[in-house]
Image 1 (tube, rainbow, N blue to C red):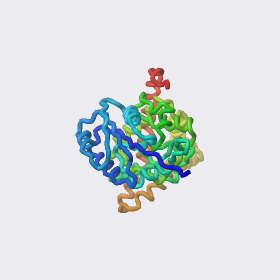
Image 2 (cartoon, rainbow, N blue to C red; image 1 turned 90 degrees about the vertical axis):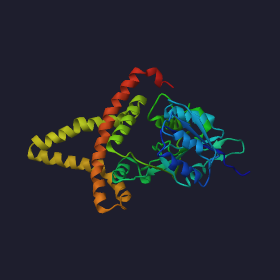
Image 3 (tube, rainbow, N blue to C red; image 1 turned 135 degrees about the vertical axis):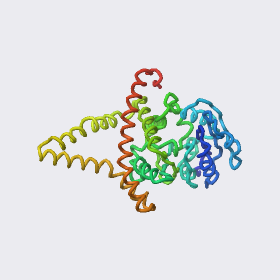
Image 4 (tube, rainbow, N blue to C red; image 1 turned 60 degrees about the vertical axis):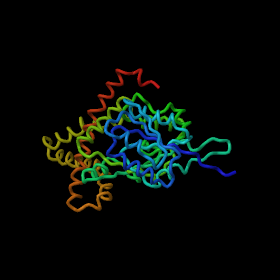
Length: 334
Protein backbone atom coordinates (compact mmCIF):
# COMPACT_ATOMS: atom_id res chain seq x y z
CA UNK A 1 0.00 0.00 0.00
CA UNK A 2 1.40 3.38 -0.97
CA UNK A 3 1.78 6.10 1.61
CA UNK A 4 0.02 9.43 1.22
CA UNK A 5 0.75 12.93 2.45
CA UNK A 6 -1.47 14.65 5.02
CA UNK A 7 -3.22 17.97 4.57
CA UNK A 8 -1.47 21.01 5.99
CA UNK A 9 -2.65 24.09 7.88
CA UNK A 10 -0.35 27.11 7.67
CA UNK A 11 -0.49 29.44 10.68
CA UNK A 12 1.12 32.74 11.62
CA UNK A 13 0.57 35.62 14.02
CA UNK A 14 0.52 39.36 13.31
CA UNK A 15 0.55 42.62 15.22
CA UNK A 16 0.74 45.89 13.28
CA UNK A 17 2.44 44.31 10.26
CA UNK A 18 0.86 46.39 7.48
CA UNK A 19 4.25 47.17 5.93
CA UNK A 20 5.70 43.65 5.95
CA UNK A 21 2.51 41.62 5.48
CA UNK A 22 2.12 41.98 1.67
CA UNK A 23 5.44 40.22 1.06
CA UNK A 24 4.36 37.29 3.22
CA UNK A 25 0.93 37.02 1.60
CA UNK A 26 2.44 37.25 -1.89
CA UNK A 27 4.89 34.48 -1.05
CA UNK A 28 2.13 32.23 0.30
CA UNK A 29 0.13 32.74 -2.90
CA UNK A 30 3.23 31.82 -4.94
CA UNK A 31 3.87 28.48 -3.21
CA UNK A 32 4.33 25.47 -5.47
CA UNK A 33 2.21 23.60 -2.95
CA UNK A 34 -0.54 25.74 -1.52
CA UNK A 35 -1.54 25.09 2.10
CA UNK A 36 -4.94 23.46 2.55
CA UNK A 37 -5.87 26.33 4.83
CA UNK A 38 -4.22 29.43 6.23
CA UNK A 39 -5.00 30.83 9.68
CA UNK A 40 -3.69 34.18 10.93
CA UNK A 41 -4.08 35.29 14.52
CA UNK A 42 -4.03 39.06 15.06
CA UNK A 43 -2.96 40.32 18.48
CA UNK A 44 -4.78 43.66 18.25
CA UNK A 45 -3.43 45.52 15.21
CA UNK A 46 -4.39 49.16 14.73
CA UNK A 47 -2.49 49.98 11.52
CA UNK A 48 -4.62 48.35 8.81
CA UNK A 49 -3.19 44.84 9.13
CA UNK A 50 -6.65 43.33 9.58
CA UNK A 51 -7.94 45.02 6.45
CA UNK A 52 -5.12 43.47 4.42
CA UNK A 53 -5.85 40.03 5.82
CA UNK A 54 -9.57 40.29 5.16
CA UNK A 55 -8.97 41.46 1.60
CA UNK A 56 -6.89 38.37 0.69
CA UNK A 57 -8.64 36.30 -2.02
CA UNK A 58 -5.84 34.23 -3.56
CA UNK A 59 -6.08 31.44 -0.96
CA UNK A 60 -8.37 30.40 1.86
CA UNK A 61 -7.51 32.57 4.87
CA UNK A 62 -9.20 32.65 8.26
CA UNK A 63 -8.48 35.43 10.71
CA UNK A 64 -8.68 35.08 14.47
CA UNK A 65 -8.82 38.31 16.43
CA UNK A 66 -7.25 38.08 19.89
CA UNK A 67 -6.35 41.57 21.16
CA UNK A 68 -3.60 41.41 23.76
CA UNK A 69 -2.51 37.86 22.90
CA UNK A 70 1.24 37.32 22.85
CA UNK A 71 2.91 35.29 20.09
CA UNK A 72 2.65 32.00 21.97
CA UNK A 73 -1.06 32.39 22.67
CA UNK A 74 -1.69 33.56 19.12
CA UNK A 75 -0.01 30.46 17.72
CA UNK A 76 -1.89 28.19 20.09
CA UNK A 77 -5.21 29.76 19.14
CA UNK A 78 -4.46 29.36 15.43
CA UNK A 79 -3.29 25.75 15.84
CA UNK A 80 -6.30 24.87 17.97
CA UNK A 81 -8.56 26.17 15.20
CA UNK A 82 -6.68 24.30 12.47
CA UNK A 83 -8.60 21.53 10.74
CA UNK A 84 -5.68 19.50 9.39
CA UNK A 85 -3.18 17.12 11.06
CA UNK A 86 0.05 18.90 10.05
CA UNK A 87 0.82 22.47 11.11
CA UNK A 88 3.27 24.60 9.16
CA UNK A 89 4.33 27.69 11.07
CA UNK A 90 5.82 30.93 9.82
CA UNK A 91 5.82 34.53 10.96
CA UNK A 92 5.14 38.07 9.84
CA UNK A 93 8.22 39.87 8.57
CA UNK A 94 9.34 37.04 6.28
CA UNK A 95 8.85 36.06 2.68
CA UNK A 96 8.80 32.38 1.82
CA UNK A 97 10.75 30.69 -0.94
CA UNK A 98 8.24 29.43 -3.55
CA UNK A 99 9.16 25.80 -2.71
CA UNK A 100 9.11 26.36 1.07
CA UNK A 101 5.91 24.53 1.97
CA UNK A 102 6.39 21.76 -0.56
CA UNK A 103 9.87 20.97 0.76
CA UNK A 104 8.96 21.45 4.42
CA UNK A 105 6.03 19.03 4.23
CA UNK A 106 7.47 16.37 1.90
CA UNK A 107 8.79 14.25 4.83
CA UNK A 108 5.30 13.85 6.35
CA UNK A 109 3.52 10.63 5.42
CA UNK A 110 0.31 8.93 6.54
CA UNK A 111 0.87 5.26 7.33
CA UNK A 112 -1.75 2.55 6.71
CA UNK A 113 -2.72 2.57 10.39
CA UNK A 114 -3.37 6.32 10.20
CA UNK A 115 -0.39 7.65 12.16
CA UNK A 116 1.82 10.34 10.68
CA UNK A 117 5.61 10.51 10.68
CA UNK A 118 7.80 12.36 11.39
CA UNK A 119 6.50 14.39 14.32
CA UNK A 120 8.40 17.57 13.44
CA UNK A 121 10.38 19.04 10.54
CA UNK A 122 12.80 21.94 10.79
CA UNK A 123 13.08 24.32 7.87
CA UNK A 124 15.66 27.05 7.63
CA UNK A 125 15.75 30.83 7.34
CA UNK A 126 18.26 33.20 5.81
CA UNK A 127 18.96 36.90 6.00
CA UNK A 128 17.04 39.16 3.63
CA UNK A 129 18.88 42.49 4.05
CA UNK A 130 17.99 45.84 2.49
CA UNK A 131 21.04 47.85 3.64
CA UNK A 132 24.72 47.50 4.43
CA UNK A 133 23.98 47.46 8.15
CA UNK A 134 21.36 44.74 7.71
CA UNK A 135 23.83 42.70 5.64
CA UNK A 136 26.38 42.92 8.46
CA UNK A 137 23.75 42.12 11.08
CA UNK A 138 22.52 39.06 9.24
CA UNK A 139 26.04 37.74 8.77
CA UNK A 140 26.87 38.36 12.42
CA UNK A 141 23.86 36.81 14.17
CA UNK A 142 22.22 34.34 11.77
CA UNK A 143 23.81 30.92 11.15
CA UNK A 144 24.66 29.72 7.67
CA UNK A 145 23.68 26.23 6.58
CA UNK A 146 27.18 24.92 7.22
CA UNK A 147 27.03 26.20 10.81
CA UNK A 148 24.06 24.00 11.69
CA UNK A 149 24.53 20.95 13.89
CA UNK A 150 21.19 19.22 13.68
CA UNK A 151 21.56 17.62 17.11
CA UNK A 152 21.59 21.13 18.60
CA UNK A 153 19.60 23.09 16.02
CA UNK A 154 16.52 24.86 17.34
CA UNK A 155 14.28 25.74 14.40
CA UNK A 156 12.70 29.14 14.49
CA UNK A 157 8.92 29.15 14.27
CA UNK A 158 9.44 31.25 11.15
CA UNK A 159 10.13 27.95 9.37
CA UNK A 160 8.93 24.78 11.06
CA UNK A 161 6.22 22.13 10.73
CA UNK A 162 4.87 19.55 13.17
CA UNK A 163 1.85 17.34 13.69
CA UNK A 164 -1.05 18.74 15.63
CA UNK A 165 -0.86 15.62 17.79
CA UNK A 166 2.75 16.43 18.75
CA UNK A 167 1.74 20.01 19.59
CA UNK A 168 -1.00 18.69 21.86
CA UNK A 169 1.34 16.13 23.46
CA UNK A 170 3.82 18.78 24.63
CA UNK A 171 1.19 21.28 25.75
CA UNK A 172 1.60 23.78 22.92
CA UNK A 173 3.63 26.98 23.04
CA UNK A 174 4.25 28.32 26.57
CA UNK A 175 1.91 31.31 26.88
CA UNK A 176 3.68 32.64 30.00
CA UNK A 177 6.67 33.59 27.81
CA UNK A 178 6.73 36.68 25.61
CA UNK A 179 10.05 35.76 23.95
CA UNK A 180 11.95 32.47 23.43
CA UNK A 181 8.62 30.62 23.40
CA UNK A 182 9.66 28.71 20.28
CA UNK A 183 12.87 27.51 21.97
CA UNK A 184 10.90 25.99 24.85
CA UNK A 185 8.47 24.43 22.38
CA UNK A 186 11.37 22.98 20.36
CA UNK A 187 12.97 21.53 23.48
CA UNK A 188 9.71 19.88 24.52
CA UNK A 189 9.22 18.39 21.03
CA UNK A 190 12.78 17.06 21.07
CA UNK A 191 12.39 15.53 24.53
CA UNK A 192 9.17 13.82 23.50
CA UNK A 193 9.96 12.72 19.95
CA UNK A 194 13.71 13.06 19.28
CA UNK A 195 15.53 15.14 16.70
CA UNK A 196 13.76 17.19 14.05
CA UNK A 197 14.01 16.14 10.44
CA UNK A 198 16.09 18.95 8.94
CA UNK A 199 15.16 20.30 5.50
CA UNK A 200 17.68 23.12 4.86
CA UNK A 201 16.21 24.09 1.47
CA UNK A 202 12.80 24.93 2.98
CA UNK A 203 13.77 28.57 3.32
CA UNK A 204 12.10 31.60 4.82
CA UNK A 205 13.78 34.92 4.03
CA UNK A 206 13.93 37.02 7.19
CA UNK A 207 14.79 40.71 7.25
CA UNK A 208 17.18 41.65 10.10
CA UNK A 209 16.51 44.64 12.33
CA UNK A 210 17.02 47.95 10.59
CA UNK A 211 19.03 49.79 13.27
CA UNK A 212 21.45 49.14 16.10
CA UNK A 213 18.86 50.36 18.60
CA UNK A 214 16.25 47.91 17.30
CA UNK A 215 18.81 45.11 17.40
CA UNK A 216 19.74 45.95 21.00
CA UNK A 217 16.09 45.82 22.05
CA UNK A 218 15.58 42.52 20.22
CA UNK A 219 18.51 40.83 21.95
CA UNK A 220 17.64 42.36 25.31
CA UNK A 221 14.20 40.75 25.00
CA UNK A 222 15.65 37.43 23.85
CA UNK A 223 17.98 37.33 26.86
CA UNK A 224 15.18 38.37 29.19
CA UNK A 225 13.23 35.42 27.80
CA UNK A 226 16.22 33.15 28.50
CA UNK A 227 16.20 34.34 32.10
CA UNK A 228 12.46 33.81 32.48
CA UNK A 229 12.66 30.29 31.03
CA UNK A 230 15.96 29.35 32.72
CA UNK A 231 17.62 28.76 29.36
CA UNK A 232 21.33 28.70 28.42
CA UNK A 233 22.69 29.47 31.89
CA UNK A 234 26.21 28.33 30.93
CA UNK A 235 26.31 30.52 27.84
CA UNK A 236 25.35 33.56 29.85
CA UNK A 237 27.83 32.67 32.59
CA UNK A 238 30.63 32.45 30.01
CA UNK A 239 29.64 35.86 28.69
CA UNK A 240 29.69 37.47 32.14
CA UNK A 241 33.02 35.79 32.90
CA UNK A 242 34.54 36.99 29.63
CA UNK A 243 33.52 40.62 30.04
CA UNK A 244 33.74 40.77 33.82
CA UNK A 245 36.93 38.81 34.47
CA UNK A 246 38.96 37.77 31.41
CA UNK A 247 38.77 41.04 29.47
CA UNK A 248 39.65 43.30 32.45
CA UNK A 249 42.61 41.04 33.28
CA UNK A 250 43.87 41.24 29.70
CA UNK A 251 43.51 45.02 29.67
CA UNK A 252 45.35 45.23 32.97
CA UNK A 253 48.11 43.01 31.64
CA UNK A 254 48.52 45.10 28.48
CA UNK A 255 48.72 48.37 30.41
CA UNK A 256 50.51 47.58 33.68
CA UNK A 257 52.29 44.27 33.25
CA UNK A 258 55.95 43.51 32.56
CA UNK A 259 56.91 43.51 28.86
CA UNK A 260 56.43 39.76 28.46
CA UNK A 261 53.03 40.02 30.21
CA UNK A 262 52.02 42.80 27.84
CA UNK A 263 52.96 40.68 24.83
CA UNK A 264 51.09 37.63 26.12
CA UNK A 265 48.05 39.71 27.05
CA UNK A 266 48.00 41.44 23.67
CA UNK A 267 48.36 38.08 21.91
CA UNK A 268 45.52 36.57 23.94
CA UNK A 269 43.34 39.61 23.21
CA UNK A 270 43.97 39.41 19.46
CA UNK A 271 43.34 35.67 19.43
CA UNK A 272 40.08 36.18 21.31
CA UNK A 273 39.01 38.94 18.91
CA UNK A 274 39.79 36.66 15.95
CA UNK A 275 37.76 33.78 17.33
CA UNK A 276 34.98 36.19 18.33
CA UNK A 277 34.51 37.46 14.78
CA UNK A 278 35.74 34.58 12.63
CA UNK A 279 32.34 33.06 11.81
CA UNK A 280 30.61 36.42 11.11
CA UNK A 281 33.40 37.49 8.76
CA UNK A 282 33.30 34.13 6.97
CA UNK A 283 29.57 34.54 6.39
CA UNK A 284 29.97 38.21 5.46
CA UNK A 285 32.45 37.41 2.69
CA UNK A 286 29.74 35.46 0.90
CA UNK A 287 26.77 37.65 1.78
CA UNK A 288 28.40 40.99 0.99
CA UNK A 289 30.15 39.88 -2.22
CA UNK A 290 27.62 41.78 -4.35
CA UNK A 291 28.24 45.09 -2.55
CA UNK A 292 30.66 47.79 -3.75
CA UNK A 293 34.06 47.63 -2.06
CA UNK A 294 33.32 50.67 0.10
CA UNK A 295 30.12 49.08 1.42
CA UNK A 296 31.95 45.82 2.12
CA UNK A 297 34.38 47.74 4.33
CA UNK A 298 31.50 49.44 6.13
CA UNK A 299 29.82 46.08 6.69
CA UNK A 300 33.06 44.63 8.06
CA UNK A 301 33.37 47.56 10.46
CA UNK A 302 29.88 46.87 11.79
CA UNK A 303 30.63 43.25 12.76
CA UNK A 304 32.55 43.80 16.07
CA UNK A 305 30.17 46.62 17.02
CA UNK A 306 27.17 44.36 16.51
CA UNK A 307 28.79 41.56 18.52
CA UNK A 308 29.56 43.94 21.38
CA UNK A 309 26.11 45.55 21.43
CA UNK A 310 24.44 42.13 21.25
CA UNK A 311 26.46 40.87 24.21
CA UNK A 312 25.70 44.00 26.26
CA UNK A 313 21.99 43.60 25.49
CA UNK A 314 22.08 39.97 26.62
CA UNK A 315 23.97 40.79 29.82
CA UNK A 316 21.38 43.44 30.66
CA UNK A 317 18.33 41.40 29.72
CA UNK A 318 19.19 38.05 31.32
CA UNK A 319 19.15 39.14 34.99
CA UNK A 320 15.86 40.98 34.42
CA UNK A 321 14.38 37.68 33.24
CA UNK A 322 15.89 35.76 36.15
CA UNK A 323 14.40 38.24 38.61
CA UNK A 324 11.00 37.83 36.91
CA UNK A 325 11.30 34.02 37.19
CA UNK A 326 12.09 34.20 40.89
CA UNK A 327 9.01 36.35 41.47
CA UNK A 328 6.69 34.25 39.27
CA UNK A 329 7.62 30.66 40.04
CA UNK A 330 4.05 29.44 39.71
CA UNK A 331 3.67 30.93 36.23
CA UNK A 332 6.59 28.91 34.84
CA UNK A 333 5.30 25.53 36.00
CA UNK A 334 4.03 23.42 33.12
